[in-house]
Image 1 (spheres, one colour):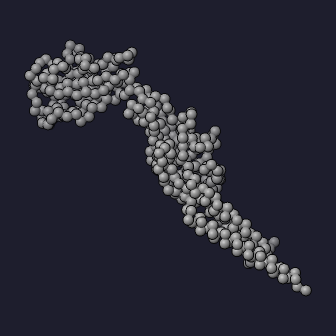
Image 2 (cartoon, helix red, strand yellow; image 1 turned 180 degrees about the vertical axis):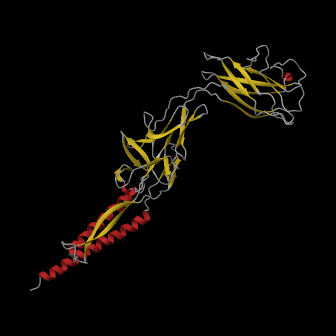
Image 3 (cartoon, helix red, strand yellow; image 1 turned 45 degrees about the vertical axis):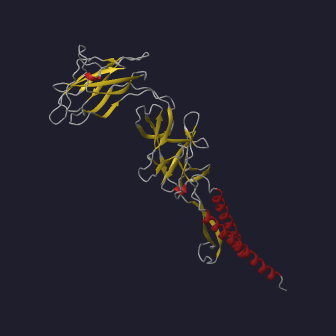
Length: 408
């Protein structure tokens, strides 16, 4: 019986060394989770399950449990690298086969999909043309690298302060080329249907009852579209509290260039004030922009993939999802930093990062292996001693058997 016990001990110690060696070998593997061999003792029982021997006959390997503890987060220079800080796995798809990973080293393939080194595609929620996330069934995330089309300017939000202490200009009538014919001026860039830029300049002239607003586009004076006979595009009057009492809106009709259509910009002065302080521009925000090319993108802690364009605009391109399991140790390791769902792991709970018990994401970073090299080297010494001790058990039993054989 000692031979059997010693042999089982040798086998168990060997398996333990295999697990330790695998941990050490993957100490630098991104997203790797160390494994720990679990053992169980073995006892012999009689056929009717009664009167079993209380003397054990060795050990056996009960299983290898992976340690899903958090690895250190290391920053990188690649914006496509993503680290999970907390629970969860990336959900990957390879020709429809779904696997799970903690390795966030991704790149963009020729078709615009976010993939890992094995070619499996990262999945998440898609975004529509307006940037809204469709949080239904996860799909393979595709980054649209086509140019962002231009958006025509239809509205200009102007938040100004007009100095109540100013008097009407001494020079009349208004002339955009004569600074003495107006009190203040400001400008904004607006865009036509083809993304051609135009400079919309507005001028503010003090009157007895308030302010008249004039405008030019690319130095060409504009007329009031509602009353073409006058060039005043808006008249602003204020109460004793400095707030608008008139509607506070104006309209500027601009001629498109290079084949673009003519367009109209509605100027909103709702938040403009008249206080006894210097003229100031608090906000001057048109809603249009020129076309732009995708220059890069980043992933937020909530998994939102935000594209950045050469025209200074940003757009939501999708959202990375995470999956978690009731029993992560039930996942089947597949190699290549991937796991597969099993009956023991339970069904995946898929959601946005940061929701429920799912972790957050960190862009331009990866999760290091959670292998503790110091602990593994100590475990290796212990396993080696265990192997030697079991070999000594077999050697001792052999000597006893030799003594019995030599009895005369």
